[in-house]
Length: 420
Ligand SMILES: C[S@@+](CC[C@H](N)C(=O)[O-])C[C@H]1O[C@@H](n2cnc3c(N)ncnc32)[C@H](O)[C@@H]1O
Picture 1 (cartoon, helix red, strand yellow):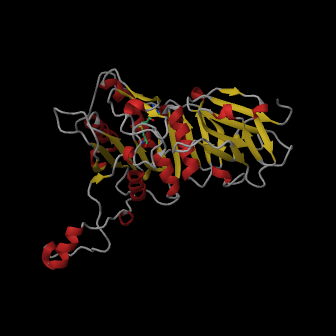
Picture 2: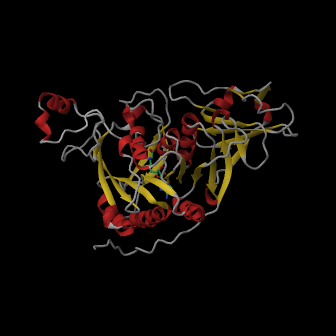
């Protein structure tokens, strides 16, 4: 069997990081304080993160979706403005997103190879890995996947087609991505009946007028058909109610099909290049458990806000020790407490993206019980947060408030217990 080699290729050796839980988020108070948080979001380089997860999760993850940088040698800025005209990119308010820059293909493969190997180790015997790339690197990745999984474990090469504007004038418009699907073993989960699609109206018409149209085979027209290995879903840029502003965000419908096909309720779905959190959000909505990580704080922050919106169960936020984010302390005097409602003075709401409250701050792990995020539409963020009933007994505990600015700066205010 042909194997891909390059000068600096080296065996995939795990490099475990140290993961520390920094917060537990109860979306809008759901599950506080007793419901255990089985889901986890992790900030850190996924080589260190996956290596650290091996002792607990080796052979335990049912589905992994991997959407790494594509080797495009571009920078992907994040859109942080609201209510802008999509047709006028020169007016968009942008911030740093994530880079996809490599010295050469060897450097890129040195990133990808050990990570795919770790994903293979983390997958359950019946598990499946979906690797999402495009023409820049998918030929190399296919050989790596053949080496790691075995060439006979390729289940599908899925082509996701979409359309949109492009400056290309000397080639055909490049409007598809490739998703390589490999299973760990011969027995794997594939829930065919959850992903069937209605037959095309022309097919229905043909069978209605001539029962012989299927050359003796009459498909179950009511049950629907198994989708082909090419999928059309519009890109997220066209889906205004899904758009988070995080670059290269994938459509929810794409992840929905993948999760329904290749995992069952309560099973564990992971995405170690999670970006805006599409996989984690859809996994949660479809009743799966999830692990999601990214090296970029904006990705983790976007995912957290999205989970607050999409998820109805608590999740932990952990950080690889090397990626801790510094917190600036703000004075307690900028917060006003009225019964169980907290408000923040107007100047501190400017350029604020998210804020949350822990009504019984233990000084170690932040238990976020109420959250406010900047709305997708051009409206101001809420200046007041009301704590859910029974989460707060006046004067008995310290209250901690955390704020995240659009720039990424994180701030903290502590009330009570003698704090000023
Ligand atoms: C193509 S984007 C993922 C987009 C995501 N599927 C979504 O729907 O939003 C790739 C992500 O990989 C992350 N990334 C790149 N290198 C990484 C690494 N070594 N460890 C963890 N995340 C990484 C980037 O920060 C970026 O968010």
